[in-house]
Figure 1 (cartoon, rainbow, N blue to C red):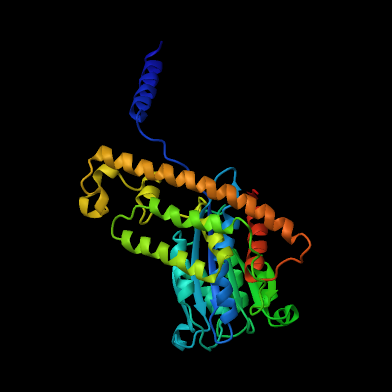
Figure 2 (spheres, rainbow, N blue to C red):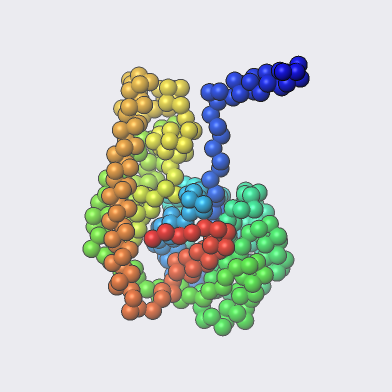
Amino acid sequence: MSKQSVFLALVVLCLASGLQGRPVPEAQPPRIQLAVLLDTSGSMDGLIDQARSRIWKIVNELALARRQGHVPRLQVALYEYGQSSIPAAQGYLRRIVPLSADLDRVSEELFRLRTNGGDEYCGQVIQEAVRGLEWSPDGNDLKLIVIAGNEPFSQGGVDFRAACRAAVRDGIVVNTIFCGPREEGVRTGWKEGADLADGQYAAIDADNAPPPPSAPQDAEIARLGREINATYIAYGRQGTSGKLRQEAQDANAAAVGGAFMAERAAAKAAPVYDSSSWDLVDAEKKGLVRLEELAKDELPREMKGMSAAQRKEYVASMQKKREEMRQKVSALNAERERFLREQQKSQAAGGGLDDAVIRALRRQAERKGYAFGK
């Protein structure tokens, strides 16, 4: 063997030795980023009620999405516009939640929204969302805006055409939902805005959405959804607030009705429900923490006296319990969905906010290579 060959062999051997024991970095999961822009002017109480009550149905639909077998990471942002309590200099709009995987926080803020008459500047709120959010630079990720309202799309000093073109240049699709007669939305620019940004236009009756049908599985799914909370281990600075937020959103869903609570419970059992910012089970599973390195003041009371080995055993036991309960909820929810499909075969397609959003999201996700399971 020549000296050069020996040298090359030694280089390869050294590189291989240096890589031994190093974890191979996992590929980042695909992302679905959704910014929801809601008109909160005085006439939009019905729209806000629909957004509050149907968020978990939309989440459950996205939980079925897979790209090349991978579960996407879901991030949702929330804006309100047309709110007269916000200064005119700010365009009567504000960002409430940046793109976040904390879906309970989004639900919490939806239940805090209050309507108040104002001017609705669609072009400006779209521009703010395009410029102000941390959109993924990956062209394969799905980036969506959904804007809903009932006034002409052209109001305000920002041209909606320019805002929509800027969005689509950045790979962001804009879907528009007009709360009123379809032809009126066409005349007032809502369809044009969607067309300019590769989106979908829909018209809904914000005040007369059909209620969700109930199913025999609802009560048991809701019960399991409450019980699964016991497997969450609040830790760190966000632990207490995260746990309380989870419980509060259970209460909000239950107050709306049994079907809504079942939809929320099913969403909590889905992989897109991510509590890793405050829950030790999710955080450890994602590799965000090392249990043995956590300080005692970051741990909940029941774990403060545990050794490193006991911590691992305790978190693993909660993970196992949660997975068992998730499987039960998922199986029941599959039965629920089959029941509802049979019930709805003879009914016309729904015309609420959730149906409009789901139709748009499915179509655009499929264009990005996503498939939806049953």
